[in-house]
Image (tube, rainbow, N blue to C red; front, side, top):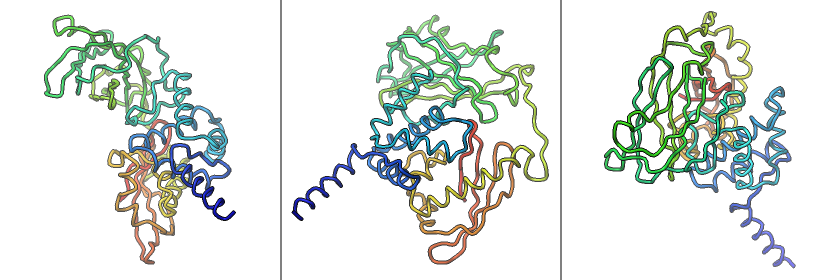
Length: 362
């Protein structure tokens, strides 16, 4: 009988260590633990995509009027007893329902998932999902026209030689001002030949599509993304726009913290504490989900960062905002390390897509 129980227990452990391991949503601790374990079993690319999938469920399937704790409780209920594959399926379905491009095989989105209310409806066109694998890089030329900005694409092979596009692809264009996405557009790039017509085959960003109240200066950043069998190919450029489109006001600040951030002080302080506590408890996936930093592009890079390993079992003494505005906040966190020594960390938080993230720790 003992032998049978031992075999059964070993089978259970094995089943929980592969792709069939399921989320335990009964409480926050169990949820964090199983999310962390599942993430560790996934390939590096999919670890990041798993975090994005949970973000999609959070933003699109929970009530935005509820607080953060209530919304994550709703997420736990929605994904309870689901495998990573089932959660990916759920996120992909939500993306289709809400008219934005997302799937588990993309590279992680550089600026996070598109949030509700920021997606511009577009007419769907039947196009190839992926361009030829011969394409290894692309660029685009920018030209200001009377109606808007024209972006003309150029495609290159692995040797850097310009080549023609063999199949139509759907490009996603995101426009940023002040670090925020203010407009999203999808456009079809048709197959073409390298001739005069090729130079006229581009994407038109109409000035009339931009909301002047969201534009912070007389230039915007334009990011263009096209699908690829191995990863998304992206290119980003700063583009000058007519000054009469700039109408966004700049808020007056107090001594070191603006009036806008003053109402968010409790939120960013709690976020910083949560981040540090998750690292201390080795709940690295939960901490990683609160970050946006190119140096921590993957879960593995984040979990191996020196400051993460030093903070194991650390205790937070106090946390305070030392500077900030409506976009960026600096927070000082004093901790007691495992060897009983004291250390001060400065966390930089940035407001991206309507939400605060940790973008740096020193």
